[in-house]
Length: 289
Image (cartoon, rainbow, N blue to C red; front, top):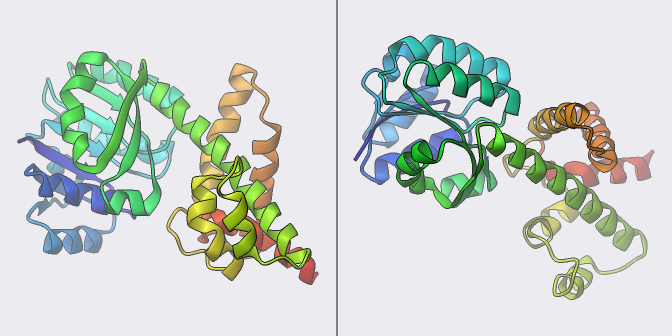
């Protein structure tokens, strides 16, 4: 089993680090809010460090699950001097492909491996150890790291070179944005037309309209319950990254750009911490207006 460090114990990182312990790995965690690291330590047989640098001492694998590019840069600057040659840094943060490429190059100069490995599956996927992980990096480093990541994954795919994992996550978020907006509009239309949403979903979910979002979120969307982990604030961050990349590569994302503005409306309604299915809330809010 491997000696691991896990930095960032949010709704995703907390259970992910726990799955590493359950798989038999030696895990030391760090979190910006120390009480969260203490809570994790009380629930698992790992250790909590008082600084990022202390957490990575002697670690073969260092996992990051942070907020955005600036967070990753800050922590990377603090841990790189203490990482041993031959170690691997795995970044589960949804961040830019540009940052992933820069980290890969900087770490290679130090003899340290790097994998950009954003995840999909939400809070439930993290808690159940059923995440989909999209990876970018060198194939030999990936093969070395994949068995460790299997502790919390149902699917792990090497997409391509450094940055490819982050680009694939952008594709994931672009697709989700359109699907959730479509589902929101469909449910809103059904209610306004006087239809029974349960009967409608029962019918169309057996056909081409079926989706994970439909199967798992239609009931809570109709009920106005938006407490399922991945917040509108974070989705806007992810869409910003995707739209920035689209401007660089010349792709056109009219739907993603529009849905990004719809999430801005959700934020203005006070729903920044509501989950991504809250797009339907702005349609219901417009009815009241």
